[in-house]
Image (cartoon, rainbow, N blue to C red; front, side, top):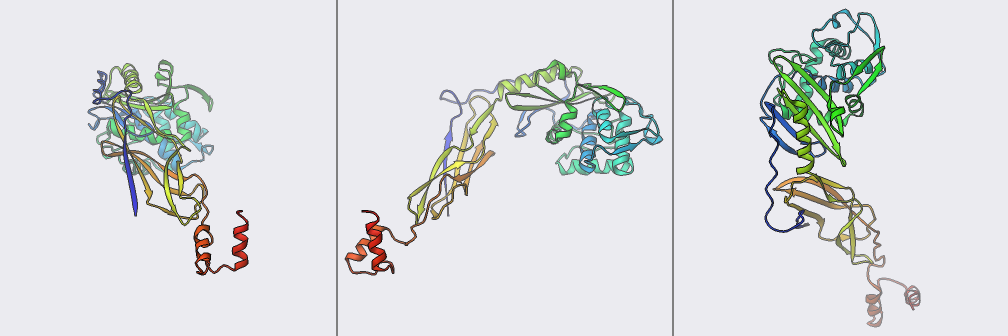
Length: 384
């Protein structure tokens, strides 16, 4: 049987009703979203579920599928003639040249090479069509329900589209891959006899920007996926069909960091509750948190915490064993949790009865837990 103790944590500086949430920025984008990178909480949205052409931010999925299907980036790729000459932006691949898969990824994500996208697809899957099928399968796995790819580079094609919300979902996964996070955040590099400079100007213009990807076609307009970090909080912004995307992303980040700061809900190794112990030398044992819990909160938002613990625990108890959970909810939705661990050892009463009870047994002539008189007298002398 479990007992649940629920208390309300008022994560505000003063009492009263919650304050009104700060108004979001006015944007030029047709679609936009701002997401907390760690929790996935949506902090701002404007037509974020509207399906639109996305141009070269498609290449984030191309890169993800490439590293997941072929993680050995040092492998050499021999460029085929059919992979060269793609229209639009290019890293200018030449038939017959050899370069590493890692070099192609830099050409894909910094130079936005459409030829690099085709070469990566052909190398990893054997042919481009199979690779595009993998892209769509991965989108489905990630829950990107309003996304469909027709090619690996984002050139305009019927049935090639996504949404701001889906692209934010993709960006969170891309940033969890250390290799891709490093590449999309690189300002410039010389590799494979070429020099690449990242098209994402926010890397220079916005303090804390960690990169991601730009895009443009006549049909899609300007598209941009970017991220920025401040005081340990990572935010992801996506805009589609946005003529003023650099300004809009800066405004979104400023809004997110000020209106939804990352708030501490729990710190690791803090004792927070006690649990009764049966059959032990101690009547209670303390429990402690196993990890930090943070969540972005607007001013005045209130979080509820539930301690899910056993009604009592049977001795012996070992420090570090799982005791239960500490669960945080906001407006009925779980926003974080941490395992609760026992803080100390609790030995059981090995004789099965306390010393006082055994003395009473002896004085009343009852059997002393099948203990010999000598052993019983020894136990008495040991505590005098």
